[in-house]
Length: 296
Image (tube, rainbow, N blue to C red; front, side, top):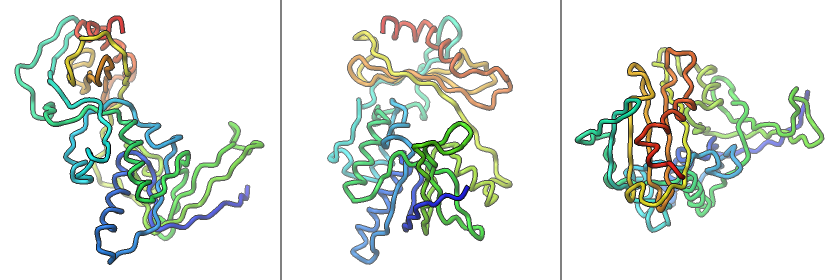
């Protein structure tokens, strides 16, 4: 089927309007703005498949501000949205009916100076900083196909809209566009479809260690007052994960009576019936967790 497509040519195309893609755009624009006029601003666009930047960013995260400080030293003055400064930390090993609290917090679990944030709000705020620098962020624009010519990535074709389940155009059909760019940056997440295409077409993964993946389930709860201390962060490992598999749970106080709770499971499980959502439901029945969320 021959389809006439709009062609847009830019200098830099970023695929993915999450924290990585937006941070890249901000850093590049900042470098050029601080070059003293020696370099002109390239035409740059960022495409995001969500209905707005942040739509696909799960709420609730702990942010180490080191990278953000390097990217944007005045981030607090710019209205950086955070729920709470990280408060007391705790780490527990769980068995089915009880828990053992670690008497010390290992380095990777220490959160002094960190912030508890909504990743959704953070991503939306970061996109606003780019728009203030007149960088275009296009929501509801998903990349469908990587354009490669002579072993060089030259652009992206975006998703066709208005197709039926057989892939045939309906009455509201809108063809995707051809976005050509001198530089294409793929920032579409840990398992992006265009990144997989690039790996296959250009042999990027040959001879490399395979990537390791986690899948997680997360919820935001309204809980009774006083169940968590201000900015409290709890991490767990052990039950319901078998000892030979990695994964664990977390609980973050997000201010007031709002808390984020989640559970992450490694995808390299030898058990073919491994079900992260079921493990999460089990996790919430543990006495330590149930005591926090009961009645919420």
